[in-house]
Length: 400
Image 1 (cartoon, rainbow, N blue to C red):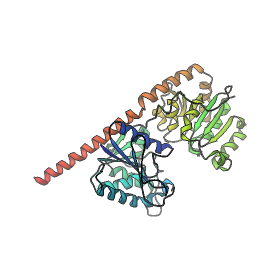
Image 2 (cartoon, rainbow, N blue to C red; image 1 turned 90 degrees about the vertical axis):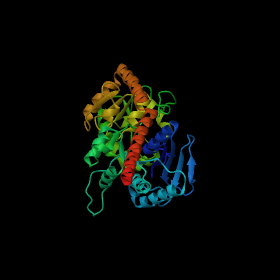
Image 3 (cartoon, one colour; image 1 turned 90 degrees about the horizontal axis):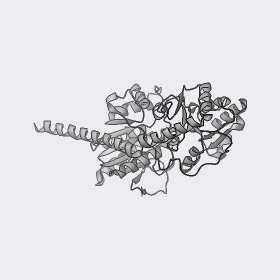
Image 4 (cartoon, rainbow, N blue to C red; image 1 turned 30 degrees about the vertical axis):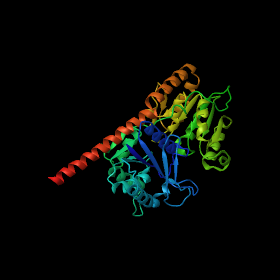
């Protein structure tokens, strides 16, 4: 099939969660024999109009809005221009997609607008949902756009049952939804390879993510009171040189000082994506303690590196982590329960080894990109077949 990926702010040429997802999914689909092109917004005036990756994916930079980085939630005003460019491109060239797969809600708006003119089916991945809110200025809210988009596309691919429930909650029909989990690159993320430096005499607990309250880093720091002698290393947030002035980092340092665990807290800041496997390999345990239904790629990446997980029983973690087999799950916002689970695992080398072995096996078997791409390809085929069947019925009725 000819597949057009629409990823307006997350170029597969960059680093990050959605960028990597689009890049890895596209590469896996190409390995299955599909012709994949990714359309992303030009955010650099000197980047080439088109770039072909080593895996044969053509990345097309769409001129829509200013040629510099714009935060994702401020891109809506440029989606009309993005859609018109796509529509013109598909009308004027021989390469017309059989299916369009949009990533993030603003990409979906552009995709639906452009594809409707050519009768091309659209599959949507949201990656994250906005807060359910009522607009007070007479304009549609983000959740309102997401609801309308979920109803307008041919199929929505959710990455977890929890995301599926969130989509149903905002009004997307259950019949529109299919769950296909995110994948993990088990070549990049594996137990073999360089390891970040660490103190071999002190257990290391690793946590990864942006330094926002809902990620639960405050709970992790509180939990350290029940895990004596262990250190907690937090990777994520701004670059290391910006940590001293970052509000989230300053709040976490102040909390650690107050609880007298500051000597066991290390904030690393943002690191290059290529270095992340080494940080996972350096850890005895990964802790993921979000309060709500965030998609936690770090848990899956750590599992692929053979690291056991302690997580909160929310969102996709309840599906990624098998409680008592690949890690332990505890209630969200409960530092004492979190600390108890960490202490037991840190002090039990045999259990850590058993969890790590099972985690590695689960990551490789259930979350390989080849398997994910095959499942997504089946969604494409079903949607395209349904659209062709509808078109044939309409033509037959017209003839009759």
